[in-house]
Image (cartoon, rainbow, N blue to C red; front, side, top):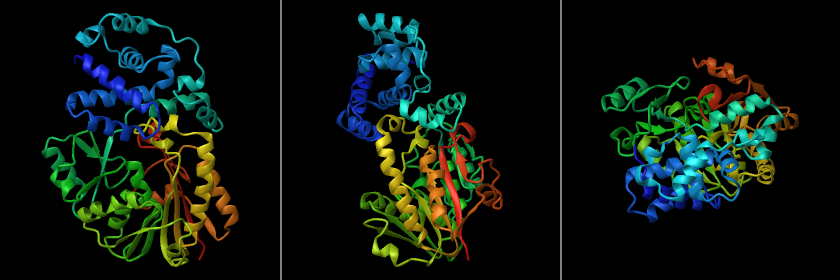
Length: 419
């Protein structure tokens, strides 16, 4: 594939906006493409791939190019060193100084690199991971996080079974296969556009990472129960919980963001669920939450977190997060878990989950909660899944990583209120 001067120029412009780190990379790119309507689909794909490629390997590229490198030089270095692009593939894309730079950077030595540089992580994050991992494990994890994520779907079992979805997609020329772990997961080869597929429009499937789906099976809601998705967001897990409840009982979707929850309503309409009740709350101590104290069978807390388990999809997060932001998050996580726990009735189940890889957001939060709440006891996550026919090596507390499971990074603890 020949790369054009316009593609390199567009990628350089987009990268310049993204590297300000004022907003998430995906929203910056969306705005860039809205403003540059003349850019065609093929060019957009190149720009997105180049920007995300530089974000993933930013420290390696900066080491090669030097701290004063322009975004154009970073794009050229990514092509030369990460993608292995040749001068011939660049066709008319380079001339003059660009050609010289491309040729020179292809053969330049990076010199001795620190662990954080080798792993393409900020220093503080590499240090946190080293507290519980060997250097080799940190690098292997980082390499798995630097690969693009596959595209997973979750079949809506109220409308279709998984085999029927796989057969229909394959008949439409979409290569896919059942997921490894979640009974509802379908993994696609490549990233086909599915927003206009009839089965998406009629709510037969949603896009959802397979690891995220397993959190619903850890909660294991039953028909007729009272359940809450405490930090529901746009409702991906809410929809799975509703399907597992067979559209019966009562399912609360709580969130502090009206904007996020508003995205759930059209998804609910497509899904056919009528047992979901979205509720915008002011905080974890909202009176509408307190009124349900001791009444719910099951509560899922997918806590706001650093998101570092999703770096395959959101590589900018590792550059946008900071130790200071992390410290604020852990305070919030502890408060949310304590508040959500009050809703659980005796014999009920509480699942605390994050898409983080860091112990201070995960094990430390749960350990502190259990120390302060003797009425709760941990259940073995791997056994909870095994009883539902899901075979996975994930530990007593669920730990998923792209390296071990080819899912996003997730943590979850399953807790039961003593009867």
